[in-house]
Image (cartoon, rainbow, N blue to C red; front, side, top):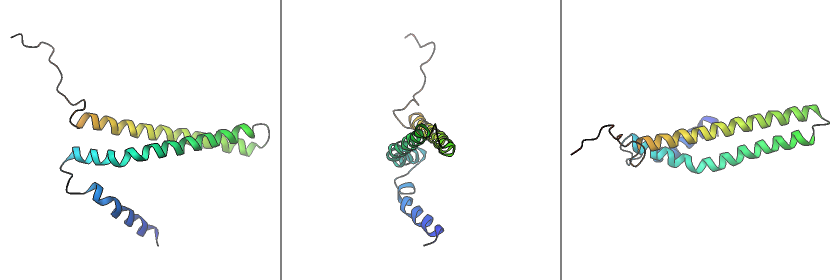
Length: 118
């Protein structure tokens, strides 16, 4: 199976969730995207933390000896931190968009500065 065939099959797998008849606007699209993203966040955060701690183990246990392993540990820790930052940032942006656009979020009208005194 070629690479493009796998990508096409993955696209077909997620197509009903994104382009179903239930999506009637931007709000439904954001709900669907959040529904797909939220379960994956825990798994990706766990993998990024595992990678960071693996780099930390390589760094600590080889700090006095193999310079190549120390540099590899530093590199793995750096990429683990970058991955954690990106994951948490995307999670925050999606949460902000859901609260700003969806009903019940922070999209309520602001209170007037000088309310009518009736």
